[in-house]
Image 1 (cartoon, helix red, strand yellow):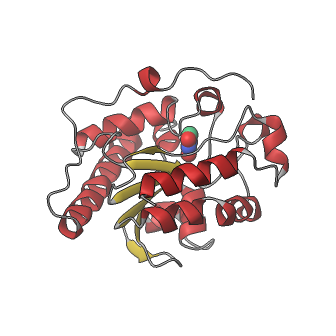
Image 2 (image 1 turned 90 degrees about the vertical axis):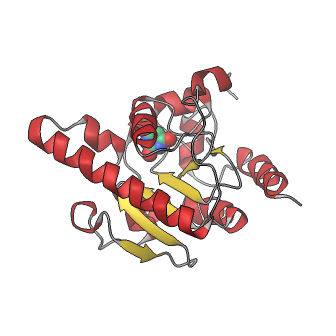
Length: 217
Ligand code: URA
């Protein structure tokens, strides 16, 4: 089976997942979006309200900022892969704790990564860093440093775009540069490991054209 076929089979399975209480408070699980052959996978925290409504990871305010940062670092969403640690929006958008993140990720994210075999993973924010690295890692201290996930993938963490949206003034400027450098480092490593891969389309990806609002299922 091709990577796309394996992911489609996994998607069918997780659309029926009722393993944890998050499922009953959201419209439906949110999977991944991007090129299944991409050497880079971006892992966020979990869907927010807009992601739940449209069924696409990182399509809301955080995702729009991510797309701008990717464009600056010479990547577009259609050429990379984006996904989340958890698949269902927690009630009230609360941050999942590490046990909740592990419970979901061992069922779905780990299987996705096993299928995709990325050369590089970018952990977006603390939840992804704690899950892919370890709970004692700190995003402010450990972002921009390479480490290896338990599955053996090279991973670098950077600030979550939602964090950037909460910053102002000099702190915002500094954090944006940090993210830019982390994204460029990730793209350059992926390019080295996958020479010739095209990380950028001519235009930014129009996610809202690709994902209509979905019915409550
Ligand atoms: N934040 C995330 O981490 N992922 C999403 O999909 C949306 C917001």
